[in-house]
Length: 279
Ligand code: ATR
Image (cartoon, rainbow, N blue to C red):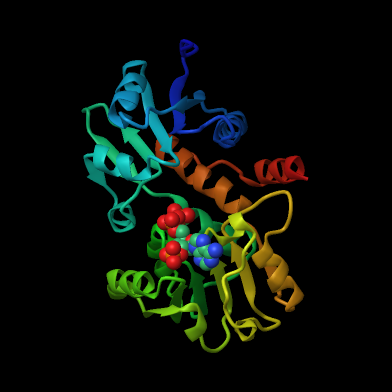
């Protein structure tokens, strides 16, 4: 592997596969914008030996990692100290290798989506009725920061009802939460977040169209060159705003950068350039 350029601190994203990750480009932009001396690489992790891959990176002087599929759980097991939200999420996407040898773990996905909604789109979550579709790892990862915004109620709807009920139970001390099946979703919502992977298959979670009103904001955690099936559906039903997960991607990266460097990069130019590159 290449040597770290002199006077630069080394970071990377680790995953498998990793070739298509946008993180090296995003963090390269952040380094340029902030002037921070950061070298950021992509590391192909060994699926049989995550710890070995991380040790090799640390022995080169690596100071922190972003962690992506399929290692978010492995990273949790590897770490020695956790933020409260990382503990709740049960999976982490950011590791900090401290000078004393300890490994601090954080999950920045939830902060990413909350900042995209509340800062970039200026949509308040406080006091709102929120519907979250899905009950997998992606949803578990965002619930703590979402509930910290103090919504009036969060309904979690999932294909496998028991998983929605379990998730609502796990976070019930943080707010008003209920877990249901898709067919049992009742009423309308101010904010609807699609955290299922249905969009990957071009499918739509079968929820009643009455959940959407002209003031509803709809957010699909997926993104791509084409609008997702969920966002097309929401737009056709007259939702006030439909948002994809590109901003979440950039904001979770910015939060990791902030944790490592203590500097928050301006995300707007990066988000605009990424959006243009998708078209
Ligand atoms: P992720 O890490 O992306 O959350 P996951 O943990 O496998 O991945 O969870 C995927 C989520 O998408 C689950 O909530 C899953 O529903 P089930 O729990 O019933 O499996 C949901 N999902 C996947 N494909 C779906 C589809 N075609 N329609 C509706 N929900 C779907």
